[in-house]
Image (cartoon, rainbow, N blue to C red; front, side, top):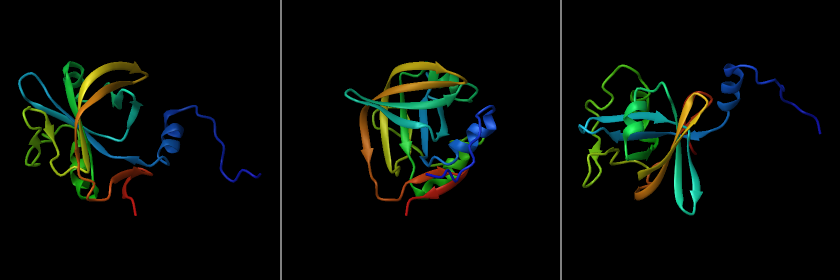
Length: 167
């Protein structure tokens, strides 16, 4: 078998990011509310199932994220799986230094102050099970307690540092 690709050593973050950019990832908004009810959220592409029994999801978040303190103190969060109609929302929640929630039409999960995307492809309300420090990230492990299932649109993906949809 002949290797057609360029094999490189992973000596720096740029080479690693180049390789990761080839991994298509679903885009999500991870949201929570602090003790005062103030909403927090960020766009995340590193969300995955961590266990089926018990059901667990895992979210990777940079420790430098503006949401890091709020999520470190939170007992619950929501993983909103974005559909193709949410590209601008994903861009907004990836932008630093703005009120990400202003004029965005997010709702509160019924019976809570947790912000969520009402027309999300899917949404998982999660109780925090664990937090792990790994490199420059915090891994937030949550146990889904409720889910919203829509699936009526194509998922929004992140691939090659750009927005894509499944065909």
